[in-house]
Length: 353
Ligand code: TXA
Ligand code: MG
Image (cartoon, rainbow, N blue to C red; front, side, top):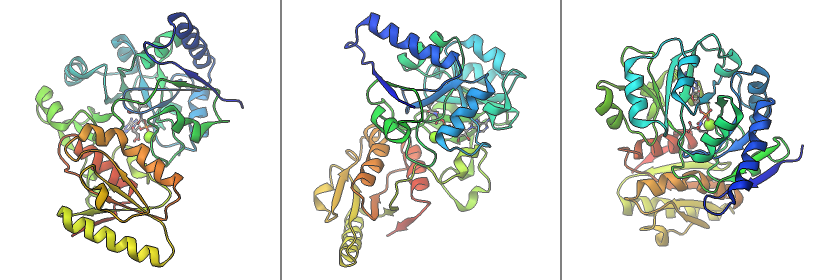
């Protein structure tokens, strides 16, 4: 299959051209095909969420296990009513505050949502994205759009159209290229079918922000620790994920000791003839001996770190390093989401110094 890439940059693309491209994309979705598109978090791989055959194509294109449910993307609150059998008051409050935006909520599903979309579950994950192209595509297609991140299963989520092209060229008919995304890690997921709402995946919307709107909220214990997790409630969080090809090891401790440790490891690897990658920060990048040293951003700029994390993991793959060492970050605010993704990418390998 030939994969088209339509470049649509705000303020650069002629409005008529933009409309034609969105119409073309909407038509593919309506006819049961796949379109990759930008959202404010990461790029998504979209299909008509209420068409089981279309949803099945997503699983096939990504190589995704069929028991891992998809998030349904909506553009209007009226869609929420028809997709769910019950909308708790807490959901209305959260939608009021955070939609459109990077928050996904889990509801009891209505009978209209096929199990092909929910991975056989009787609940459904729903989010109203804020990216103008995502909203335009949903509206133009006339569908609600099931969309996981547009990477092949297990690889880091795509934060630019070129990442999608890397993974899915030849497999899907169209990629809408809206430039790099703004946030860079996937939406926060909160389960509202529990008595006390539970965060299943941390993201840009933090537990404190959610707590401020609805009061009590708890965390899936699997979010930052492997051992205590049991079975995470979001099936997708069970799989090794977001992972670069080389082994990633996180190193935690005082800055000087972390640098010293990583430099020692780099020397050891060099003796074995191996190429080492290091993920450092603006402050530390010049102090590493690694063959490939990449800065993830300034240490106190969590937004920048979130934005560059997945691109850096992919870049390490391109350099074909055989081991990657990374600094750790504070697990507060959006840092919690960053550490959650890094721990998963590292298969929970963390050295405390
Ligand atoms: O930011 C995002 O959420 C992006 C963009 C494209 O919107 N999408 C995304 O989708 O990250 P995906 O498929 O990569 O991750 C969806 C996660 C998975 O971990 C899945 O198991 C969980 O949501 N999930 C979906 N439906 C669920 C349900 N009914 N109950 C529990 N977890 C659910
Ligand atoms: Mg994903």
